[in-house]
Length: 422
Picture 1 (cartoon, rainbow, N blue to C red):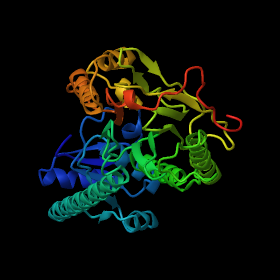
Picture 2: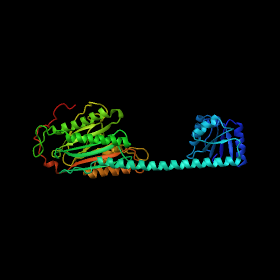
Picture 3: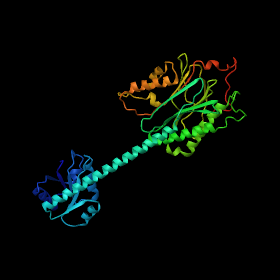
Picture 4: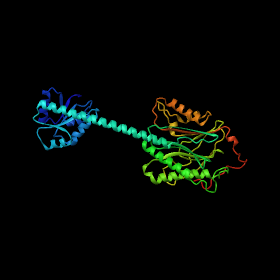
């Protein structure tokens, strides 16, 4: 039916007269009833170039016909209504924006009116195309700005700590993503705070929520008065409770703010937040429903740091427990989001935890381990589209650094944090 004129009418005298005028001008045309065109069995293989609608049809039915035909092609037909004479029904169609023809139908005038209607249709399509291109460029520009802002929330550089090396990798699935990582000195460099998180959604909304969590967590950690009790850093040993209190305060404060102000938005995030003493390697952490980070011991053993509380932003007054570990000489702590284990190949097979453990089996610095994962995931996925953000953070203790630590006297247990670990 492409290039043809379609007359939609209940075979009224006006429709028959219009068909004869088109035929006299050599314009191919057919007449169909609205019931035929709207029937489910009617095959819409292509649309006519011009749709002539009897003014006797109501506006709602006419709109349904136009939509039905337009869905079959990217180039909708030009629409013109016609009538045996001026009437109220014709006025309604004209007010709806249609061109019109009124009997008697002079063939040469009909041809000119159809040509004018096609030109209006083509001009409208061109304008919409230009507007869409402009909006698309503006949208892409806004997304690029958003990506730059998001990258500004990630640390420009990772802390440089004697005896330790730290490396990270971040690749959003879209222009902006919902993952983040962070690492920073606390209490004049005597402690190292670090985090990795994954917001439940993707795109701009998730990126904004990510930025909020990152800011809240860092501010709560840095501003927390972990020095109460008189310790100000320096050469004295830190109180055994400073890192535990700091971790609990940072996570609780962030969760309380999110649930008090953003619970209705239904966003939440899994988070692993840790505080480590670089001198002793003692680590306290809270795992808020996140994928268990892995410690690769110098001898090859792998230990997972399991969740100790719910995801952030799910419930007010959530209970978070502390976990404790020690990173010894040549140990590596590898943190990741589910974009690592759930990376798919072209057949839909996940990278998986088994491949993750195999990739982590070999020793190396933090940068070597992270780069090894990047290569392994790339080799697994190949040409498959990345559907989730991929974020990794690695911390490695130098083979010699742990041996110079002050030894804890035999039989003296590691101090526990003060108060209830709820």
